[in-house]
Length: 294
Image (cartoon, one colour):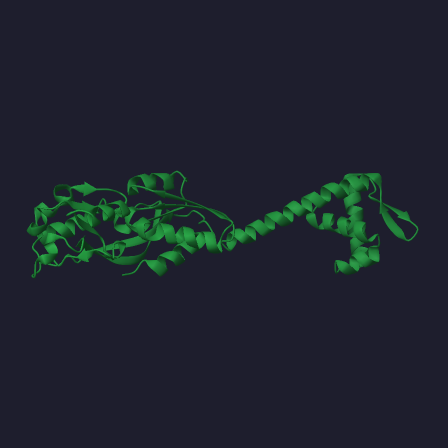
């Protein structure tokens, strides 16, 4: 028994005529007759009675028609769902975001999905990269958007770097440090609280190279939080200095240091190698490419 045979059954039941049904199905009449006969042979009972010039369903045929109609409907719905998922129009997408990309991407991504892909179920998890990687490996997340340099190379991970963004030291416009005319030495920042999200080993190395051992994040960062938005609010209303992606706080003043910081965050998508990717993942890529730039 095949879906094709069930479709033939439904067409013949609707028209009552082999010739009209065959024409509508783009079949020859003998081919349609063989299909119906094979279905009757498999089911062990006749499905149609010849009444005058019409073919009418037997009582058994009416029962088969009812169930065949539901099976064909379910198959069509399944096919439509598959097409929608391939096109990113339906399905489920579970994304883990690190602090930096989360601050820039979370709201725009949710807006994009709500406006243009309302049938896609979206779940966003925020957290430390190690915990997000654990959830990815346990199949609780489909992808991560994180600083690619915070992910250690591993055979089971595929990391696609998609964007680089400049980091900076920032403060509120009327901060005491903004009154200085010349570029600042790192030591000038030390009297003030330094706020930052957890930084990768690569950024820590750059800080130490530029400003010495005292610039190690474990030594100099006094306010550490996964959420950049919270740190920005604190810096706006205090003498704290923020070390973060410049684009995360455009209203803050960038402090000029000597030597220059020259550090960049490298954001990328992390997925499990060899695993089929969620169809809606292409939407995440598009939003990243549109927004993650200086």
